[in-house]
Each structure stands twice: as C-alpha cells, then as structure tokens.
Amino acid sequence: MSPPKFIFTVLLPISVITLLAAPWVGLNNPDWSVLTRPGADDLDAIIFWQIRVPRVLLAMLAGTGLSLGGVVFQAIFRNPLATPFTLGVAGGASLGVTAFLFFGISFTILGISGLSLAALSGALASIALVYGIARATGNASPHTMLLGGVAISFFFSSLILLLQYLGDIGNTFRIIHWLMGDLSRASYDTVLQVLPFIFSGSLVITLLHRELNLLTLHDDLATSYGLNVERMRIILFIAVSLMIAGIVTVCGPIGFVGIMAPHICRLLIGTNHRHLIPASLLFGGTFLTICDTIARSLATSAEVPVGIITALLGGPFFLWLLFRQGEAA
Image 1 (cartoon, rainbow, N blue to C red):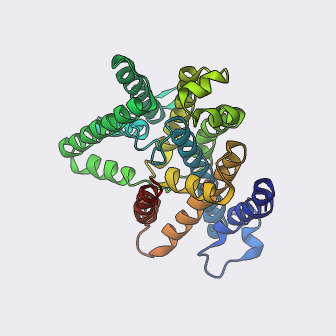
Image 2: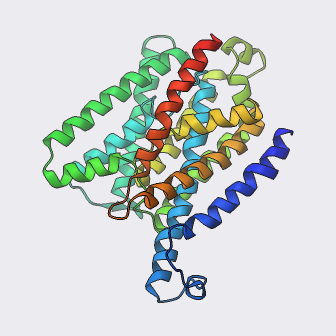
Image 3: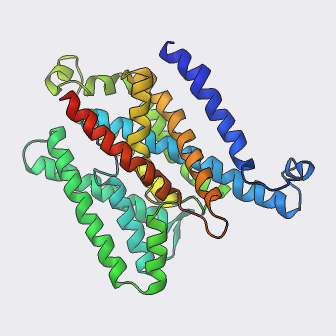
C-alpha cells in the first residue's frame, strides 16, 4: 500500500474514530438523550461536554505538536533520538513555568496569561543558549547544537529541582504534579490557547517538507541544492520550540511522544517528509489521546497523569531503538 493511501485509508479513519469515541470511554449507564445535547443542564452532560470533550481535543492537539516536534528535530539534527525534550526546549519552558509557580506570580498581558509567557520565555532562553553555545564554539553543526541542548536540558533540570527543594509544600506539590504531564486542566479556553501554536507550527513544518528532506542529508550536499542550511535550521528550531512551549504551558512536559510516533510512522511509510509529516500528525494525536483515555480509566480513586503512561511505554521503546540503531551500525 502506498504511503498516501495508507494515511487516508488507515490512519485518518483511526484518528477520527478515536476522536469521536474517546469521550464516551468510561461512562457508566450514560443517558444518550441528555449527552447528545451540548446545552443540557444535567450533571453528566456538563461533565461530558465541558470536561471530557475539551480534554480529548487537547490530547489530540498536544500529541500532534509533540509528534511533529520529534519529526523536525530528528531531521535537522540527523539523530533518531533527538526530541524537544532532549534538546532543552521543553526543559526551558518547564523551568519558566516552575519559576512562575514558585514565586506565586499572577498576571495577564493582552489576554495572555503569565504562565504562558513564562513558558515562552523559558523556551526562547533555551533557543538562545543552545544557538549561542554553537556559535561560540565556531561550529554551529547539528552535533554541536545537540550536545549543547543536552547540556542545557540537564542544567535546567537541576534548577527545577532546586526550586522544588526551596519551595513550600503547596508550591512543591503543584510543581511536581505539573511536571508529571497531564491533561486535567483541559477546557475550551486551553484548547483555544494551544491551537494557534499548533496550527502555526504545523503549517510551517508542512510547507517546509522538501527542506526537511534536504536537511537529513549532509550540510554540503544540502547547500549544493541551494538550501541555506543554517537559516533553515534556525527557522524550524524556533517554530518547533514555540509550538512545544505552548503545549508545555497547558499540559506540562509529556515525554516520549516525540520519539515514538515519528519512528513508528517511519517504519510504516518511510522517511519522505511529504508523507511522514501528515502521518506523524495523525498518529501522534491519536496515540496521546489513547494514552490519556487509559490514564483516566485506570484508577477510580485518583487519576494517573498521562505523562506516566507515555513514560512507561516510551522507556522500553527507547531501549529498543538504541539496540536497533546499534545493530544497524
């Protein structure tokens, strides 16, 4: 089956079915006549339309953005293990939010919450540091930027731990719960808050699918085809970083989606980004939605953060990928 046919006949229907079915999972003796009316005053209808539906929409959007972030980072750094979480971008956004919660700040500018601005500031700081380190070494190669990103990620993680240690019990609990990554804060407002980041980032990535194919080649070869490699790498790096920052603001750092979804799609349809981008978009959103459905259905007394589910699946997958890369080498 050709990649386009696989995307439209397999992945797209599965994504649509997941999107429509996920809000209904776990309902006990639902009153269909009430739940099919969005404006009903019944408690079950309110829970369904005001909590479950926006949560599924948010999971689909977040999974899409995280998966596309993995696709782009693995291409521009030519490393199968590169994701926004290993390159400090998510760490920078997480540090910004952690500092915001630690100091108990609360403000809004032009309708944008301070939490969102803190995440964006952290992500931008990460971008500046990674690129500045690469430029300072005189070698802005993917390898140098990758190592710089890993170092920055560890540094930010240390600062987050320090703020947790210095914070009071209430702030520390809020920070730890947020760092687990979950979708319990979902609402139509948060969906609308994330949507511009996902839409703009996805649009940039889709329009630059040919450039992504060239970036997977050696820099000299890509340059011979007329591509300004350094400028294109910066554009994609910033576009993905802002998209991830928007997701982290609402959902926290949900790991491993950006490494699992792109690799599974490569196994299914190949490495051409013209097909890989839409496939990863659909698969990533579907994957995170299913994980979140499992997370909220596992326990009756307390909800399991979806970040724990993705980590439990992602750890073994990461090890499998390491062994697979070793065998290929």
